[in-house]
Length: 101
View 1: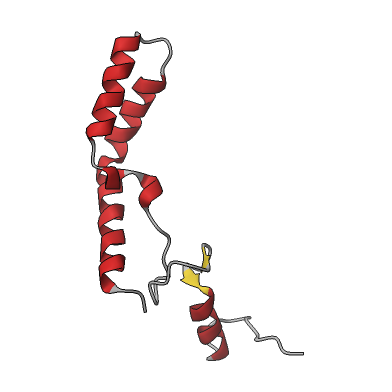
View 2: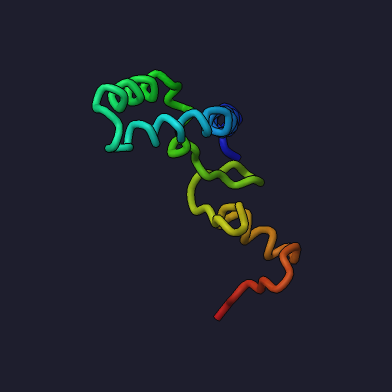
């Protein structure tokens, strides 16, 4: 199990990213629009820099929904390889067979 503080921090980052998503997209569109004057684009960059850092989508860490493990994460299954192996061995995942040779 991952530390509860790390899992909770990641949940807070997800919440902030969702909250500021529209505002961030609008400011980025303004800042990257080369048809606008340089002053307006610079002002949009300053406003973007004043937003909380944790509101950026790139700060979200994919974590296993069962254990909270941040590494060896399968996106389709939303779990780590270890949780997948344990559930597969217990027969809880249909069609998954543990291979042995």
